[in-house]
Length: 217
Ligand code: SF4
Image (cartoon, helix red, strand yellow):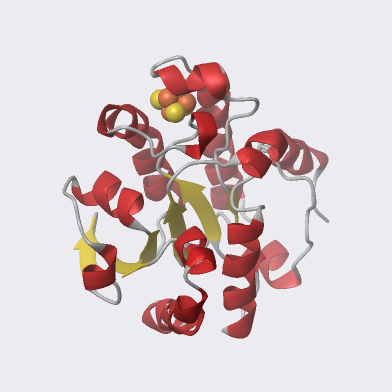
């Protein structure tokens, strides 16, 4: 049985719906509880964080969500309007496209972990400045350490810049496999870009399949 504290921590982390996956529950261990507690510590910090100006425009910070033992961690840019309202990552149109491609790959969104470079919504969905990215990224690096996935999938140019500290043309880098913190890193488009360029949807979905293959899934 799943314990009440575990459910409480999940709720505090922003989960609105908890899917009871037997394979995940069977793995539930003190290690998993430790991970959730560590993530919850970060959540408490970002809730009151004023380290950059983005705190002024947030309704809710968005830590991330998913399987704390995920083999794959998707990293996007920053919360948008819907994410800011709900306190959850990738729940708008772009998130629906990402979820669709995960399902097309024969998997479920609940198997992976999803987070962003910045935890607070930039005004009018502008790209976070380099300074804002640099200020926020230590939270993400802690999440990567806690979750310890096999593969990071960077969604778009801001995720690439945040991780590798250099600019990239994603149309050129897409499909490449790099390394960071001892993990394989797969580069692809941000799903919001794919929504604006629907001819890229097939390529994007294929990339998501490649990410699962890379993780041995
Ligand atoms: S974006 Fe990150 S660094 Fe900036 S206020 Fe939010 S949590 Fe703090």
